[in-house]
Image (cartoon, rainbow, N blue to C red; front, side):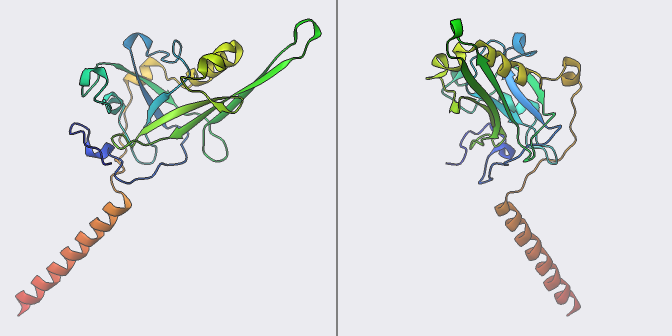
Length: 221
């Protein structure tokens, strides 16, 4: 269903656009949070549903303040724009496929010569558009290949402090310093056109040129 929230800017509507299945070194991510938590919004939370907005790199997909739009009117008392702060993250490294994919394995020695236990945590960053927020992305956290959800987190990753700490520290490395956040500027143009928009734009140009040619012929007559 197309976005029906009147206060969401049209440029944020998905409008049939597909997810961009890669990221860019130097691209920013924006996460809304309480003012007191903006220096590290991941410190006190569960590693589940870590939503962010992506900025884009060659073309601008969103602005920092876009992450404050409430796309779920049933939450936050129906407020349209949330009175929250914004944390800035910056992508500094990607894998060979231009994706953020990090993993860490921890082995816990067995007690009194018993069997050791080895577990792995993986962090993936994915563009996961929503109809009212094309910029929506999320960190997906996997514990031994099981994605962490609110229903299983307390039974899995939350019980493994070394892996939980690694995940939080790895994401925290991306948080930019306060002075960078305050002086952030971006003059990139917005990526406005979908494939359908481009076709319509081409038709408008063709019609305009044809009309001009007709008018020119009439004037000559």
